[in-house]
Structure formats: C-alpha cells, structure tokens
Image 1 (spheres, rainbow, N blue to C red):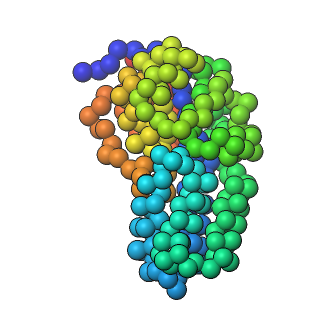
Image 2 (cartoon, helix red, strand yellow; image 1 turned 135 degrees about the vertical axis):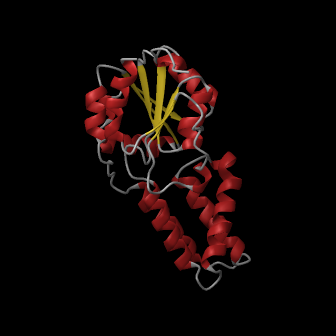
Length: 238
C-alpha cells in the first residue's frame, strides 16, 4: 500500500564510504599487517583472528582507526605467543598513524548532491567513530559548510536516529538516512520510523553487513549518491 506524502524535511548522511573513501585504507593496512606477520601465521587465519579481536574490542575502543590499531597489536602478540619483535609493533603503530593522516578523497557525486539539497532540506552528518579523526576528515573534505548539523556518535541504533532527527528536524517520520551500511545507516533508521536509503560501496566491512529490508516500504537503494535528488523529488510529489 503506497505511503502518504512523506513531506521530508531532514536528510541524514553517513560519512565514511558514503561521502569519502575509508574502508580501502583499512584493507591496505590489513594487507600490510599480514605481510609483517607472514612468518608467524597464514594470511586467512591471521585476518580472521584480527577480525575476532576487532569484534571483541568494539565495546572497549569503539569504531575507528585507533581501535583497529590496538586490535592489530593485540593480534600480533597473540599469534607470536608474546614474542612479537618490537620492530613489528613499531611498524603497526606507524601504519595506524599514517591512516590517521591520510588525505581525504571524496566520492563521486558527494559535493554536487549536497549542494543541490542544501537549502531545501536540513542536512545532518551522522557518523560514528573517533571524534578527532572524524572532525579531521570532515574539515579536509570541504563539505562541512553544507551541513546544518554534525553528530559524531559511538554507535547507530534506532534511538540514535530518533534523538538526532528530533533534535535537528521534525522527528524520524519526516527524515531520511542515507548511507552505505545496511546495518548501521539503513535498518536502525527504518526501525526509528524514518526512511532509509542504501548507497552501496565496493568495499564494506564484514561487521556492517546485513540483509536488505526489501519488504520495508520506506527502504530505497540507489546506484550512486547522484540519484538522491531525483528520488527526493519523486517522493515529495506523492
């Protein structure tokens, strides 16, 4: 059954791998980590142990590069039975530091889409991760001026979107969340009563995977961010 005119007023955007590249740097660093420990563990087993450490540490360190670096150090200690050479630990720390200073590469259609929507909708950046790193990336992206509000959160649950869209908009029912993670950006926004738009990225962290909620009437999937203005125009005309 078609939904009534949603009269959307507020659009939330994820940041990492929605507006700029992120996951590719984790993958490259992970490959470097595997090479550093090639004499101590087989690649696939090492990657699994690192993933297990990341999953285990999320509630302690949260999302982001610092937690990833600490998980690499922890895994290196584990697979070498505490005998990991100091130079390998130093290389891991250096790799994490390099990730924290890597130049920002905005994704296609990001700026032009935000510019088209600015003024017609309240635009809110909703991103999770390390505060300093997310602030750095936003500043370097040059996109900050296009947002009416920025929220850097430790996690994304339905109550997160309820709170943010009520604070910066007219509640989740008149809001839409756009992002590359079904698990973090789309499903909880839908559960909060809003719209959820999935814009896939070629690389998505395995812990962010979820099944597309294809039966949910407020769910949409786009090929790229540049399709968002036309989607919004179509919805607003209903």
